[in-house]
Amino acid sequence: MNMNRLVCIIDDSLTIRKIFEISLRRTGYETKTFSNALEVFRWLLRPEASIPAMVFVDACLPNMDGYSLIQRLRTKPAFAHTVFVMISSHGGMLDRLKGRLAGASVYLTKPIRTQEIVRVVQEQLGSALSEDRDTRPKQEAERLAMYGGYR
Image (tube, rainbow, N blue to C red; front, top):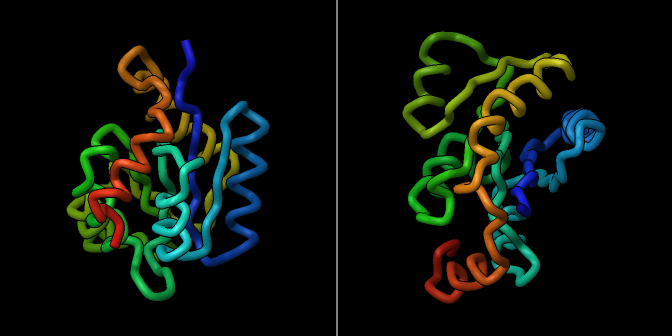
């Protein structure tokens, strides 16, 4: 069975993106990284795009903050089974609540150890990578684009 092992990392820091990418690829996950929301939306419109199993989103992004990005993606049926993880340098109770209300299942505070990244992915996707988590066809992203899903 072909399982969706795509994890997206959205952070304006190249260093953070590389740390996540290296950590996850070592454990067998496919990764796609972006520095802002606009890059994400552009990629999702491409024919080769696929819906990720998990998305790590920095709370503070240029142009659109991570909370708004998660809320926007959560409205799309294609993302119904995607796990969103908010990452931020702010770890207060209100920040965590805001992340949860936006649709994040997990809230991680920077700095994040590589072991924590892998642990969260394995915990969140371990049960999700079952028969109902098959890799979604590329046509799904095309269908969303056709209906103006990311404009």
